[in-house]
Image (cartoon, rainbow, N blue to C red; front, side):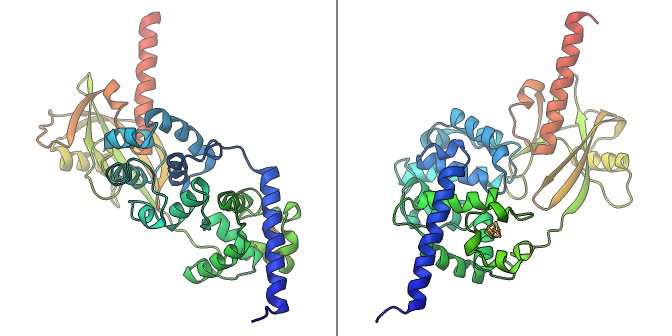
Length: 373
Ligand code: SF4
């Protein structure tokens, strides 16, 4: 059947649009460490790290990761605690647990090489359509378009798709983006769209006047850049937690979180959430009674740390505690550890800041001692 003039026109427009995006990317993309390689292992790890985390935050973690786990075999042989420690501060720790599990599966089933087939990749823990498409296109040069928040935003604006992001808009976008895809270098094209969203077509104040595809953009023509995509309301729960810094003079008391659920397998100081109507000190007394069956004597507020994870905004109050009695620890989740050992355990971000505070305090004391001041 002969092609209609409309279909031919759209194909030509898609080709020009695709070319403009690629030209812009070549000239303007940021030099980032994971763009210097096609190693599937490095691409996979970088894409997992970049989910939910900003580029500047990922850069140092990326470098350290490959010093610790230079290849998949080394990662598979490491303990979960080592992997969680390397991830400490990046948040969404399930990602680290999944990478570790996936590495072991890759070594068992795929000879320690990241699979190059969609079905094999998607079967790995933590690998969804986005990660699979990113690895296949960037590392293996296959034609799989990716959809992340940046690509969705650029695409919805370009095509003037109103409303919120959902499965329907994803299907429309995937079809349109496939039409733009070049015959070769699909990975670069995916990265170009993501980069355009990160640097130019930002969610707020997009730089339309500098945009290489302004002439193709329906949202720009209609002045709808700021309302596409329709913003999602994000609600955060604010919580306050209290923790007890308990020491026997040489060691600190810490406990390991259960292997399932939020912040699984990470370490923490004893304590918990302040209940409604409680003062911070009352919450501390109750929590330590419940967790360790001890009464708190003196409790001095050491520091307050603010941090956010998933849907929570947390204020954490760390108290240095003197106890009325020595806790009888019967559960293996509790452990007395030296400051040096404390530094090696993986903690959630808030508690990791408390550990750094304890380290700094100890080095300051050491310095005073050595200078005799
Ligand atoms: Fe985004 Fe503006 Fe470019 Fe359209 S013209 S793609 S809204 S930056």
